[in-house]
Image (cartoon, rainbow, N blue to C red; front, side, top):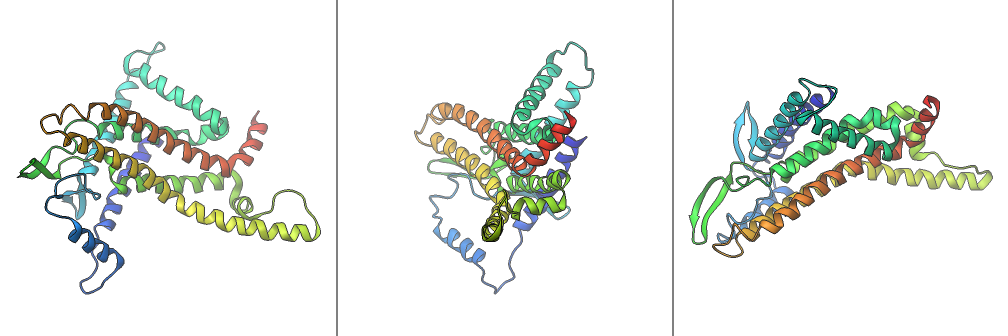
Length: 317
């Protein structure tokens, strides 16, 4: 149920971010965003149009005034496929697992043991549902984005170099910064909840600003000032974590898809052959990026909750 709730929250937050990104400034008001948009539109030449993946997902329709983009469609397909697979694998469970149940138990069991070794059994029991869901979803979305037809089927026009797709029907889910930002914000909210549950509201701020170790006199005053300054820097770092997480994943997947398209256009007539070695590279990159996102979020959680988690583990042990 927690995994299903996570998927619903993620897919609900995504259109909101897309709607915010689709907001237009009132006419007559010049902002840095409008200046950047005008610069990009004037800098793009007709020869460049249709070559390479656009930085922004293409809107292919609207549902109740919410924009529906091509990357959003892929994220829905991936989420629906994972939910159906989980339901099929657990519909008739047996003591000796076979087929889909065997694969699901191997995947979940391996991830649980892996996370237990990193953040400990106490935190793993509380947070595993999120880390496993985020890893499986990112990995599936990355690999689905490599299926032929994603980014190459849609609307376009004929050009001297061939047919250029200007409005693809499908786009990799993680090649849209709205998707990666939504996952990062969901983690940030979950991280706050876990931190308050583990160390408490007062302990949360003590972990950030309180001096560590024993000191007296002038040294104690100096340590208070130093740790308070370090805590302020840590707050800035925490606030930037969703941005760094989202752009790290988005940048790598976006660059990979552009690389595949560039390789397909490198030698006319051999567009089907040249990208094949790079497909294997992107398969590995999709796995690495899913691991990086999961491990970074797990380490961020452990750094805030490890002290209290250790005490709880000692008590329960």
